[in-house]
Amino acid sequence: MYYRIVPLEPNSIVKQECFIRSDLEIKCGIVWRIGSLVTKIKPIFLKKYNPHLGIAISEIDGAEISEIYKGKKIIRFSTNMSEEEEIEISEIFYGITRKYSGTYQDILQDLGWKLASTQFLIYGELEVRETH
Image (cartoon, rainbow, N blue to C red; front, side):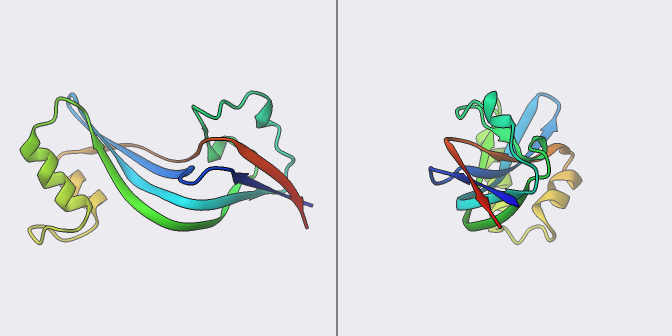
């Protein structure tokens, strides 16, 4: 027996990476329009789950992402970031600039940013379905 965890709203599964440098922060990643999780362990997290705060997928026993579709890259900056740096980092993240080569994660680390965390999250109202 498997349990499929399905968000009832679009854009509810997120991969988020957080980079820090001194007092600055970048949160970036991918938001998937639709998707689902699957686990062999009956979900018990729903008793204390807050749809507005969501939950890290790693906190759901045995859960794995089973389907994700139509991912969109997003990036957010701390409010004290300069506009010039926001533009440069956005161009790196979206692959617009030819000034650097490599993944945005490697480039940001080469520029002095430290990867503080990476996590997959799920938000919103959820439905759990038993499946075989």
